[in-house]
Structure formats: C-alpha cells, structure tokens
Image (cartoon, rainbow, N blue to C red; front, side, top):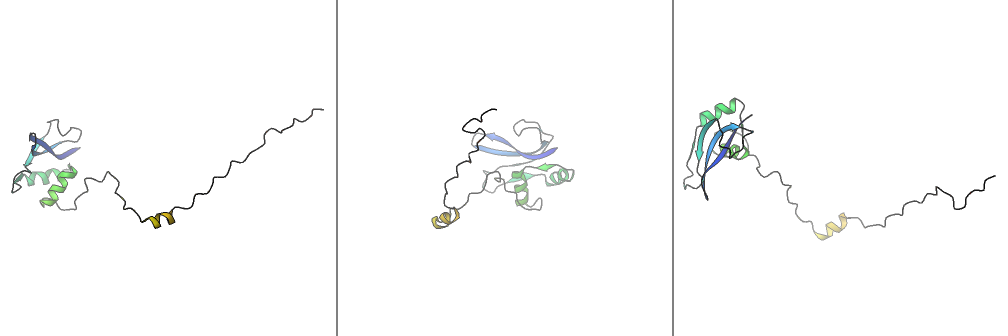
Length: 130
C-alpha cells in the first residue's frame, strides 16, 4: 500500500522534513521513495512549507494513505477536509482521582473468604471386609 509520510532530513537539532510517497513497508529512514511531494521546515518564523497539493490530492484519490501527523498537517493547511486524528491515542487516558469518601463507598468492605469445603473421599475408619 502506498503511504504519504514525512521523511526527516537536515542536521542534528535542525529538522526539516520531506513529504514523500513511499511503500508502507519501507521505513521512514530507508531513503526509498517513489516521489517527492514537497517539504516542510518547522523552524522558520513564518512556517514556510512547499507542498504539491495537486499531486497529494492525486495520490489520495488513487488510494494512498497518509500518516497521522501528515494528515493533521494537511487538515490544518486546508489541503484536505476532515477532522484531525489523535496521534497519541495508544495510551489510556489518565483518570482523575475521586474524593476519598466516594472511594470508600465504591469499594465494599472486605469479607473473610470462606474456607474451602472439605470433602471426605476416604472415611476415617476403614470398613471391615466380610
């Protein structure tokens, strides 16, 4: 399956990204891609980006998928329409602590566990044989 994703380029602590079309089996650092669809530099003040929107729409119509980060970026740039996707949805949400009174009421009082029932498989005194 074809995937449109960001490929990091640039030096240490100076990230720039290349928007590439690649096979989903290729890793983002492999350097193998079919087509360059633009670039993005997050460090610039005016957030300059150069995207080939016509080619991105063309490949999306052909069935290519976008990465979550690139999907959110394209939605914010109004290249595609839709809702943003939560990129951090893998972790479970943090639950707020309940007040101590509600916790005590929610947890029933611990009752002692009943002892397991003893079954007599062998009688205490052996039966006399006739």
